[in-house]
Length: 125
Image (cartoon, rainbow, N blue to C red):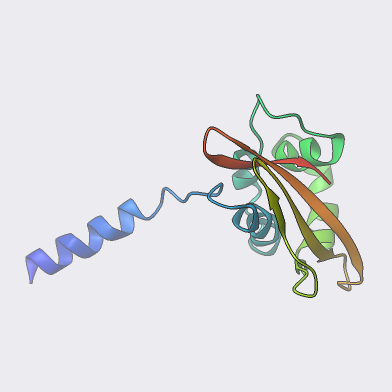
C-alpha cells in the first residue's frame, strides 16, 4: 500500500512540468486554457527571446506584467478554440493555426508559430 501511494505521489509531482511547446496546437490551446482557468502565469512559456514576436503575441506572453489587460484577454480567449473547419499548416519550422475566438466565438484569426530548438513558440497573430 505504501508503495502504491509513493508511486501515485511521484506521478503527480512529475506531471507538473507540462510541456506547453510540444506542438503548434498545444501552444494555441494553452492560450485558451490560460483564459478559461485565469492562469496567466503559463503564458510566458509561449514566447522565446530568440523568436521574433509581433506586438500581439508579445502582449499575450507578457500579460502577467499588465494586470489591467487580463480581463480583456480572458474575454477574448476563454471561449476560443482551434478552427476544426480549417487546417493547421506546418512548413518545416513555421506553422499557422486557424482559431475562433471572441466573447461569442464569432471572430476568426490565425496564430503563427516558429519552431526553435525543437519547441514551438508564438511569433504572430
